[in-house]
Length: 251
Ligand code: PXP
Image 1: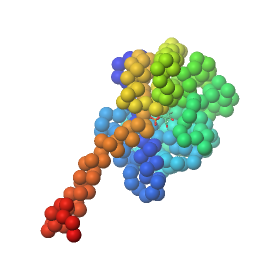
Image 2: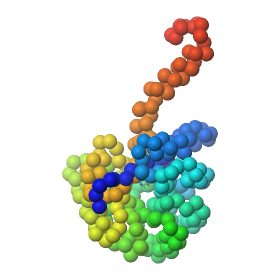
Image 3: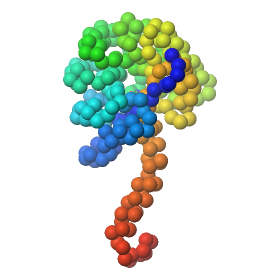
Image 4: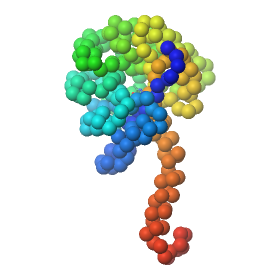
């Protein structure tokens, strides 16, 4: 695998900000359309059990609005399988989920959960959903994905992203080895979590990785790229409604 590396843009945290006020701003569907226009190859959204960001109706709205494939991240639960079967996203990425976690802190124990995962993966695959497993870059997990018949694995880059120096080099090697092992076994390798402008290049250079899924940093960085023009526009609207007062006058 080499050539074009796909970018899946995760829009969860647009919904996090929306939900902080319970209204409609900012709209994650609009964010998905902006990402599509800007060159994303896919949109990723994680429907969490606690609905802390993406909510049920977002999934249908996304599928209706975007022309890109939707990758729905989901826990291995009956409720989520039923939602996925109803909406038929292009892909479903099975992630471990704990209610109290801030984010998806580690990979799925695909080896230990074989009997739970097998029927669920089969049901998703039977309707044509491309199943991926979010796993640590560990050869045992790749072997487990192979025995589960998962066509895709997403390698968790969190440890890589949050380490430095020699520790980071070790993690990078684990990710590269896992991607190579997956590819050798006919499994497509994706990667994601904690990727930023500063740390993406070595991961993007791994030739067997076909797709990166990136969320939090992109939404965070968008604040700084976008806040200036938005404040200017509000300033202009306010000034335009007071034609007789010059800007900066104190009344
Ligand atoms: N891939 C998976 C499977 C994830 O669960 C997440 C986080 O929701 C990401 C990628 C994106 O991680 P981040 O938001 O840190 O870029």
